[in-house]
Structures are given as C-alpha cells and as structure tokens.
Image 1 (cartoon, helix red, strand yellow):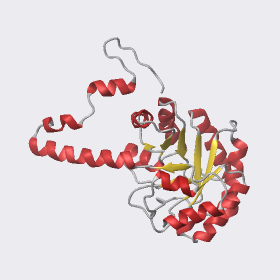
Image 2 (cartoon, rainbow, N blue to C red):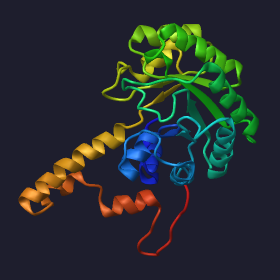
Image 3 (cartoon, rainbow, N blue to C red):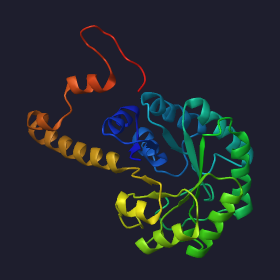
Length: 268
C-alpha cells in the first residue's frame, strides 16, 4: 500500500496496479498542512482529506487514525466518522498523545488496558463488519521486542483484525514477530527509519499480508520539485523540465476530465 497524500496521488497508485492505498497521517500533515506528524490535525480535517482520497479511487483506502483522537469514546466516534467518509479501515496506535513519528526516539506508550479499551470501543462502534481495524504497537522501541509481542496478543484478544508492529529493527525481528503472532500482519517500509527496507516478497514469505510505503511518493515528489524550483530560480525558465513533467493531457486523463466536452467522471 503506497501512501497517498492527496486524491490525485491515490489515482496514480490505483493506475499503477496496487490493490489498496494508504492514507498516511504524516503525508497529510506534512503535505497539506506543512506541519510535522505529531497529531496536530483534527479528526474532522483528517476525515475530510482522507475522504477525498477514498472517493477518488475504487480500491480500498486505509487511514492512519493515530491514537484515536482521544479516549475510547473519541475512538468510537473516529470509526463512525471514517466509515461515513468512505474509508475501508484504519490503524490505531498505542503511543501517548502527543505522538511522535514511529521511527524517532523519545516515544512513550500507554498502558495495555488503555489501548485495549480503545480497540473494544472501535469494534463496538463499527457498523460494517468488513471495516478493518488494525492495532499498531510502538512498544518495540520503548519496552522491547517481547513486550511488543505481549501487547499484540492483547490487542488481538480485544478484537483487532490485524497487527502493525512499528519500527522492528532487523529482518529476523520481522520473521520472529510473525512466528509469535498468528494474525494478519502489517509492515511499514518507510525510508530513513529504523526498519530494514525489505521487499514485499521477503515480507510475504515471513508472513506479512500488508506492506506500507507511506511517504515514498511524497519524498520523491518533494525532492524533484525542490530541484526544479532551484533550476527555475537560476535559469528563469522551466523549459528543460518539460520532459520530466506530467502533461496537461495526462493530468486531465487521470482526473477523468474531457476538456473538449467539459464532462467530468467523478470517483475512481
């Protein structure tokens, strides 16, 4: 699941043949609001932005729900809100609010019973039994590998459909976690983090069912845009970049817009 930071990117992900799209909390915060991923966007803001993405494609979209936007009652409200917005599921993490990027130092996690209460509330709140509830644990970097396994099992017992162990540090840890937790598992292959960049094939062989690439497209886009802008400032023209741009025609085709007739095909 590559990460989409807007609906146009989600359409590119679908066009490339991926089976699902990930709505990264960091992607929305960084790209849309220009702020770090520390829980600054409200539920209403995330739901609106994620809803644009979900409605732009036919493939399912999974959203990053951070810490649930509050306690169990707020978490239940978040589930209902994301269901109405058209999302196919969410992941909920056990960090203390305000949260930090999962691959940074200085994280803290809530007690297990606090997280399991949120999970139970999320299960009770969903109206669609196919709405996927993924429980993420950040315990590896805080309490150690064994405690991450303990937490994962508790989250499954509370009703989570799948487990997302954040910031595992070696290929062996990914394999050992999958041996210990018999459930659908999600892996995060974010760049420049604590985890090795394993391939989808390697992770599938280890037992993982979902793989996130949350900021890959965003980072490539930002790097290329920065280079283009520096060159534009220096040369005063964008001509040398035309062959590296998406054309107007290609954009219209992606958006489902016919400029000759003015017709627009909504949705994925």
